Image (cartoon, rainbow, N blue to C red):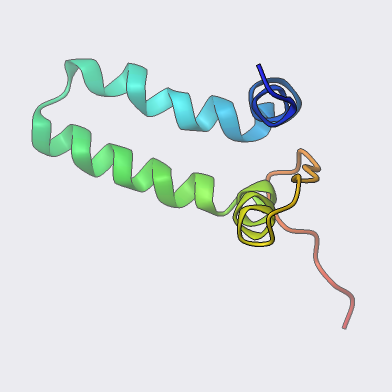
Length: 77
């Protein structure tokens, strides 16, 4: 397992738990309901600060620096 995989699976539990939740929940749903639920959860995971960091680090071809926070920290005005 690479360092990035360990970061994603262990250090970034804030994103992993909500990402896995739909996989378990949709088993008993209709295809339509399951798809809608999964899409809603995808949007929610995308709001996690570390999701932005994952995208930026991938595009910048660098290792991610995850902070494990659910939302981006607010910048002072």
